[in-house]
Image: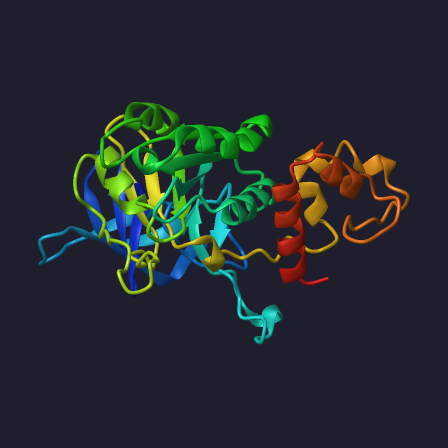
Length: 311
């Protein structure tokens, strides 16, 4: 039997996978009919997977190999399914596996801080039991007092926040410390500087970046698939598509309320145990939002997300 090596999948492309060995070497691998995965009902191989492979002789510049085994994923970001298809016959399309934390990149301005999107990410992270780090870029463009006021709600929720400026290179040391030794999946709205930040903390230009479109005022998408990069301080970052590509099928109208954690202390006081916290009389959550005990903006985010979900 040929020698077997271990590594982590850092990039996918067509039928091949780039695997990084523990010593940093990159090997282009493929799967075969005998490839075994411990992840039944999901993509055979995804970025972030730990795999065992056999090296093969190669006439190319990059060594090649065959993946024999894919280890169990401790967590996974799953691509949203087409609801028109028969789900029973579909496998989960995994964007990235074995994530330690979700890093949500927003911007203080240009485009302005998008609290609705942050709240959507936060609910997703709660549903997946993933720690979330909120990174606010472009702080050099912000009214600091107004920004602090907007972020206070998330601080009270216990969310870890890093305020940075890629343009002025401020806050990057704190961000690097939050990423040290972890596998961190970066995601965020287009135009917020996600790829620029990743290039800065990795220490080299690896990802495409794009400016805000002058025609629309919106960001230009530069990420279509996940890419995993090693950090100089230890750990990895994974650049992923936006949250609208993620599968939120685990969140329903019935369980959404549990992922807005500030609701939990008020829910036992509701008149109905099945209260949706939308229109019911005697709803303690609605009353708390009306009196300011719950941030009204967060409550509005809940209603907006509630309306988009299946029953």
